[in-house]
Length: 364
Image (cartoon, rainbow, N blue to C red; front, side, top):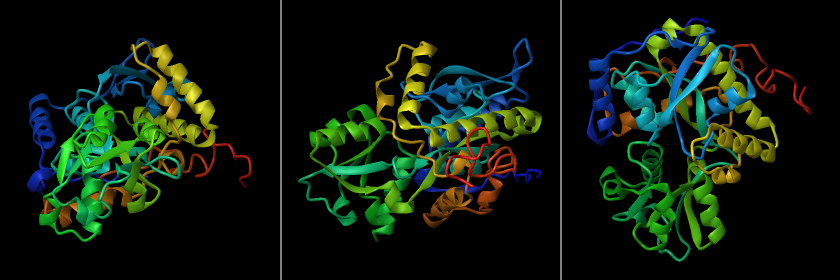
């Protein structure tokens, strides 16, 4: 099925959502231009540049380790500081793919950056989620109790800010009341301590930081991202449109391998996934600890093979419109993503099959 051409117009964005991410990306995009075809190895494989996360294994890194790519070779160029920074680097041609919260993807895309989401990258499922925690004896019990209080999170303009504002709105706070809630940037490694020392009133915790904090006790969940939307993919991998047009078979290979790696984690025992992640971290030699992967619980992606659902982008378009941050030529989510290259969506594999297209035990 051919991809739907995307209109490339600058849509009017207003308010705090027009961050340095958007303006810097567009300036660099104009100054540098964008890439075309991927560089090649001596034996003809496409070299795809990416940024990583210390102590974590991306699904693409797992795909490479599992041998799921046929003609793709990954090249790590360093670690990223946040999802918005990662996709900004894609838009400016510094790397070939990246991942971020879908709200940040929508903002960058609607500001005119030529990017398209190609498969889901993270989310919330039965085992993995982000929680917004207060101290057990805190008087904060409702959204209204957060007026004038501080919520600690890793960065602004991304998942944690959007989810906080969405929860406050769903709980009935007015835009003016929501603006009184102080969103405070705190490094994830320090967020629990900041909460316990009273520097913030709510701590945003996920993954290892959530698990270790809950082990120490004394915390209470005010809400979680699962409370808002249930099982839901919150982020996507993106590539530049010119790259997709120039090298569609490379994109197909990257997506099929990464989707199968996601599916591998969805169908293998937790202990096996953790052991594989630890081996990958040890082998890549980046002077990092594999301790955090011991707290891995699931892929966090509810759809088999990371197939993107339209509502996972549309909800953030609606959010930007509702909050007055997106005006004129409002896009439809279907124009911002494609499942064309995903074997679990394009008919290559049955939707609920395993990482090699096989019928799983207990399935028909």
